[in-house]
Amino acid sequence: MSIVKINVLSVPAEQREVLERRFASRAGAVEGSDGFEWFELLRPVEGTDQYLVYTRWRSEEDFQNWMNGSMKAAHQGTAGGEGGGERPKPAATGSTLWSFEVVQQASPK
Image 1 (tube, rainbow, N blue to C red):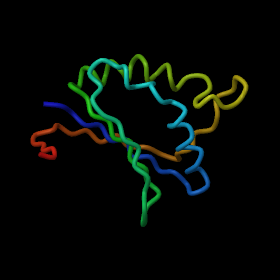
Image 2 (cartoon, helix red, strand yellow):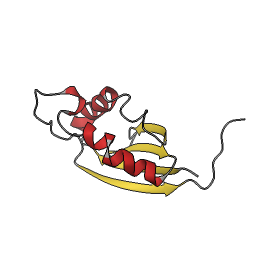
Image 3 (tube, rainbow, N blue to C red):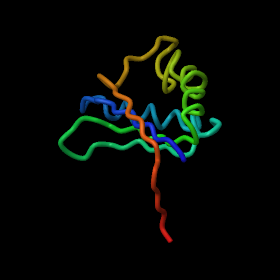
C-alpha cells in the first residue's frame, strides 16, 4: 500500500501569505513525479502555527527519488519566482517530517 509523508511547518502569522503564495506558484512541481498520488497544503485554523504538507506516494522509493531529484532542484535558486537570483528567506521557522504507511482506506460509495 501507499505511504504518506506529512511535513509539519511552523509558520509565523506574518509569513502565512508568503508560504501559501509559494506553494501556489509551485503548481505542477510534484504532480508529474513517478509514484506521486496526492498533495494537500493544510492551513491551521486555531491553536497552532503549524501548516501540514500532506503527500501520498506509491512507495518510499518513489518519495526518496522525488526528494533527491525534482524536489531538491525546486528548492534551489529562487523559490516561488521571488527575488532576482537570490534565494528568498524561508517562510517557515522550522519543519518536521512525519512518515506513515497506509494500512486502511475508504472512499465515498
